[in-house]
Length: 111
Image 1 (cartoon, rainbow, N blue to C red):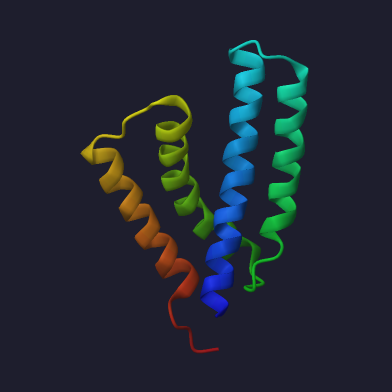
Image 2: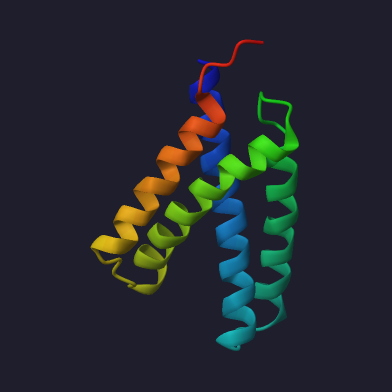
């Protein structure tokens, strides 16, 4: 149950961070305006809060593990929101990152 909660929080954090960055990108690069930029800034702030809800209490470990989620999530977001098509190397790299995330976050530790 702890892993499921942690994974859900990583997913929510990814939606907030990647979505927030995408909103800022759209606001600035695609000239959609300040409402998009402001919404992105709010989402990015919420991401920072959600990261604190992880059951593990080690900042470095949580953020390092989240990096793997961010890599895979960014490619998925680009595919859905912008029509980007990851190639086999993108997908392979994302899977490597997710495997690293799982090792960092969920490996049994003798504490």
